[in-house]
Length: 195
Ligand code: B4P
Image 1 (cartoon, helix red, strand yellow):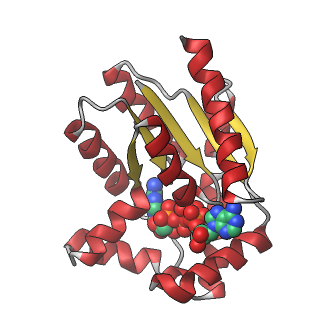
Image 2 (cartoon, helix red, strand yellow):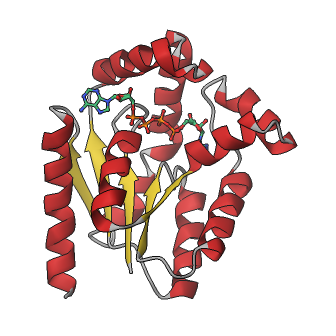
Image 3 (cartoon, protein in one colour):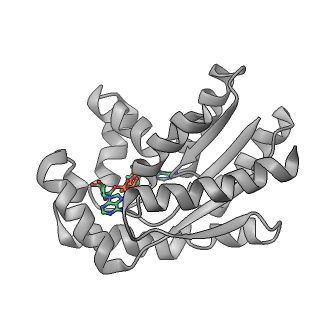
């Protein structure tokens, strides 16, 4: 089983690269952002609560997203591996993920972190907001708050993976194909050394 985390600030290309990586390595894509937006679309009580926080650029409570990931892991017992996109985003989520994967005896192989400048992220998200209909992508202030929230709560998660040598940094600026090739190169190194 190959379990990979795609890590990075909002607009760094996690969703974009996840689509390509899951196809190439036959992984199950688990995006907490997508799972939350699906709840919002269905207008569940969880979705309605999450929307209030997401529209302000804040994170959704840990217990909500951990519960979603736990359910998704249980529902897919036979897949070749998981690509975690946008999860974990806090230290508590990282610890919960370790525990969930320990039960499966399939730890994280690598945490691939995309590095992108703040101005580039803001530019990309505002551009996506023109067509995506995502309310968190249309307001410059909300985008800046998401980036602040990333520095406050999410950036420290990298230390969790640095301790075990699993944090790998990849340049997230350039063409989508160039970045994809760099990510594949890092994954292939891990696959070949574990074979
Ligand atoms: P997410 O859905 O995870 O989304 P994101 O961080 O905004 O963007 P992502 O990084 O995937 O976007 P991408 O670069 O692919 O989170 C949304 C919200 O959900 C969070 O703010 C939070 O409130 C909540 N949430 C989610 N997970 C949570 C968790 N675990 N805990 C608590 N709360 C959680 O795309 C951006 C744009 O850039 C696209 O338009 C794309 O086309 C473009 N792009 C990508 N690569 C490019 C490149 N190389 N060059 C030019 N443009 C590029």
